Image (cartoon, rainbow, N blue to C red):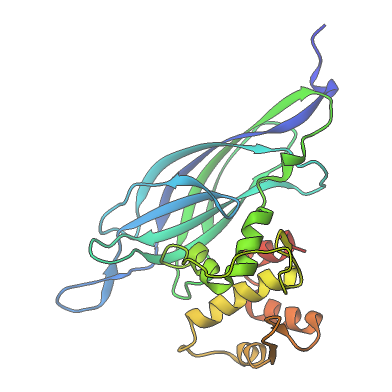
Length: 280
């Protein structure tokens, strides 16, 4: 006898993501006469979670309102135990292509994959975030079809949380610090780190499962280094003037007060909130 949907459990989600177009994106390329920034050659790198690269769109030359119409298909496993409305996240990095130099980061987006019980299709505009790119502007239109995959009820695999940044990713963050974060969010590839994760890592947590403090500090330190020469608000000055314990690379004061300051500075970013909550 064929099982009804009510007798079957959700195994995961098959997702078809379409990056349709962007509008009013940041101009990175200068006009050869006026030297004003007037256009860009945008393309987008697409990740499931933070480190599972799905591919990239084509480059649209000289256009801050590009049309990509690029398709990405992937599977998101059902989480083993969660009441979250999101099955996972898609992380997008928008770049300006350059022939002679590394591509310039134009902004980032975090797009949740909904954990609905029925197949859904949505089309929406998402604002480009300024995390690690303070001059980011514009929006990206994304179509997402999420097909529910069901199976006869049974235990879920422990791998069902694999859409989240993996312990291996956090180990690299704990060991490599800002160099690895710059690789994730900056304009260059991850730098090689001389420090390798070990079970005796001095960070708050072990190498396979570093604590939240390691990750958030690395994230915010990277942002600080990225904009060290720029103007900082009073909240930023207070955050970055907090003394650090060099041995553990941690704030010497209360973690709660430090995270409170960090949230005041960066809390408006979906990327920051996700990174914070996913390693809490």
